[in-house]
Length: 508
Image (cartoon, rainbow, N blue to C red):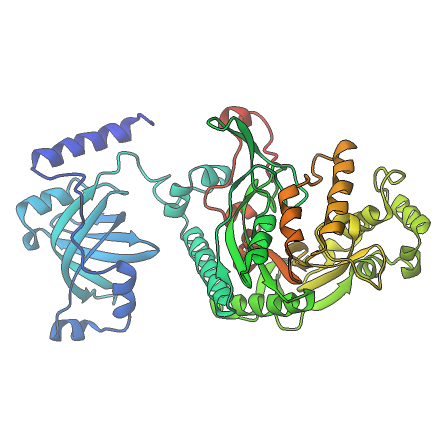
């Protein structure tokens, strides 16, 4: 705990409060309304109207400004993004309450009851009749309340960031409303929200490196889930028609402005549907969130070369491109070359991709897409026809050998969603798992593990289904125009300070 002269002064005031008989940390605040609601309700009420019909109110908040004029003073109280001015007069308060006012510091919490008024300048103000002390802040607000600007400190001490930067509080509230809207959307389409295990004996549902832990009582390794997919599919086998889950996934990978080791996904499965049904639903979902939560069909995301805001349009329908068509378009490559394995390898070599001689043509197609096309996809675009090597849980396209019925949605140059016509043939699924096992033996520690119980569930009958995963953190980044995933995650993972000191921050 910081021990400095400011803290010492505040500790002295704490003792003076106790000497007055004031409890500096009571259990309950005596309030009648929230600041935000009070301000909204009386945004247009005039001073004359307050005089004609007095309005009583009791609010609580953190003290963020203090202007003392001797026998009168003005305070600003902040609560949950709302702000209200409070006017206090010595002759309008009890002797104890006025003494309490003299012991206040910025950052303290108080509750004030009184009558609403307008000042001569027209500012909505609560004229205090009593003051309840709620919490003494022993440490000062950062650099007199508005000074917390260092990005890393803001992420490490998010509580100070929320106090000092109102825009951050707004962003986090928007994220919360976005998640609520997604839930309502899915429930409106008859999806049932469920919960599946966070700790799994076999990691599955995606190609990623898991976090490993250990269960002491059972003496067995467990893995933090990299995806809920295989458990959600088991529920479809069990008879649910439509299920979804909004929850955390964990992947033991690097950090960047678009990656955090724990992240929030919305994943869903619908029996009887395929990729086209999922596409239509995703278009409706993103359009709904943009227009209903954020108020516009086109939203800003970043700036152009001239420093002007760039807009992303969520108007329907979204563009559709096959992966190879996107490579040809943005890489200015002859589309016919992407049909021939030998030519694909030559194109990959020309793009200076690594290990082109040992990678499969399908894997090289995936890397060529990332190299040439991914960052060029600004407005929402569905990328379809993925190589089978990249999609071991997806139904093959009968007319396009080597490719599967999958899309990824790209917006603002990054992937936002991933969807499949789900593979429901247990024999083919087992073959795909065995192919993944060979990759693991070859050194690919992100390849999938064989989940025999999942294969058993498929053998009991898994109907045709459309599956979807949407990255909620990235969706929040786009919709709130936040450049880093850490700007929309309340407590992002950070390097320990003792490691980070004296080194360059590599977290993005």
